[in-house]
Amino acid sequence: MANQIIATEALTKRFGGFTAVDNVSFKVDEGEIVGLIGPNGSGKSTIFNMISGALRPTSGSVLFKGQEIGGNLPNKICHMGIGRTFQIPRPIKRLSVLENVVVAAYFGQNGKVSQAASFDAAKDALEMVGLPTDRGASISTLGAAGLKKLELARALATKPELLLADESLGGLDNSEMDQAADMLKRIRSEMGITIIWVEHIMGVLMRVVDRVMVLDHGEKISEGLPSQVANDPKVIEVYLGTDASDVQASASSQKEL
Ligand SMILES: Nc1ncnc2c1ncn2[C@@H]1O[C@H](COP(=O)(O)OP(=O)(O)OP(=O)(O)O)[C@@H](O)[C@H]1O
Ligand SMILES: [Mg+2]
Image (cartoon, rainbow, N blue to C red; front, top):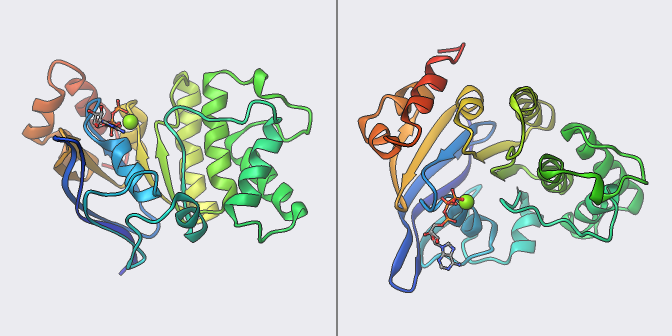
């Protein structure tokens, strides 16, 4: 049986009187790619923020390889082996593409690696996401999709065991999305990284993930194989009038199902 890498138990976040994440428990095994979906404002990024240390849970647990990490600082959690991308890219604008990733590689590994090793890790990460590795490439040459790839490269350069990818494919066209789906599979197979993936673009997500968890108003309302989740009446109701047909169409087009 695979080892559990991350689990939450009754994880809850309140902002004043408003409950953004409500008693959410889940488990992810090493090597899985798990999709986290739900309408806008359903609590997806807030869960990532609590796992990665950006937000302190109001109550409940976050267990990384069996150890409680809820409320730890983001740099500590990063050094333990959890990388995350931000839904809104946060590049350091005065640095080049390569330098942005080198900084992540160096500080993300607690400055315990040499500069040369940081450059190597950065170049590997840039190659994985398909961005230029030359020293001259400037941030200003990147469009929305490029900035998303840069976010992913920065997270990968920290050499995580678990990657929390928050809407990392925004701004991609259809063929780029297929490439991105392959890329996520390679991140798992070649780098051995477990992935929790938040994505609004349902088609590509449903094709890649092993399992899906669905949030609505901060609560986990469904969980299972993509085909099961897409046929769950609770999920269809939540997506009705928005993209219920997308959820079903994309799950039924899965080759392996
Ligand atoms: N720091 C904060 N202070 C107050 N409310 C917040 C804060 N962060 C998030 N929220 C609220 O919590 C709810 C969940 O937000 P969250 O960003 O987790 O949703 P999401 O599922 O990631 O949505 P999206 O699909 O739009 O990215 C929203 O109603 C949001 O406005
Ligand atoms: Mg979000």
